[in-house]
Length: 105
Ligand SMILES: [Zn+2]
Image (cartoon, rainbow, N blue to C red; front, side, top):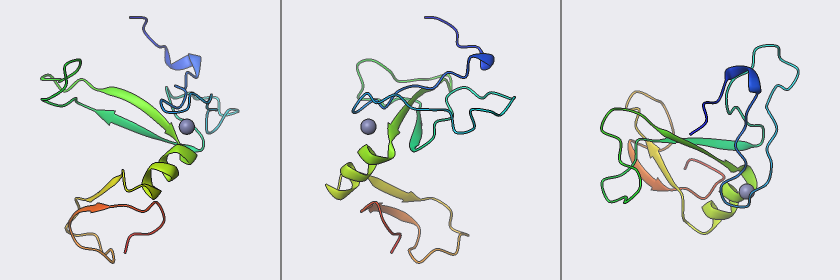
């Protein structure tokens, strides 16, 4: 593994389509590792069923999916929206929902 330094401005490409992603604030002097524009960043501690990654120490993997790929997956019903905040005043209640990529109702 190669360590990523915060001054590199490193941004992972979309893990689905491979498109290169830009930093959200390219001119900002303080660079953050993997802060993409027009994409969603996912952090995972793995999964018990995975044969390649299941963190027991809190370490994470981090990937990006561009907004267009998230939108396409949501339209197919492949994205779960988790409302984990019972105090949040959203139209839907607490729980897990198939997200259509557009609304929260
Ligand atoms: Zn993509």
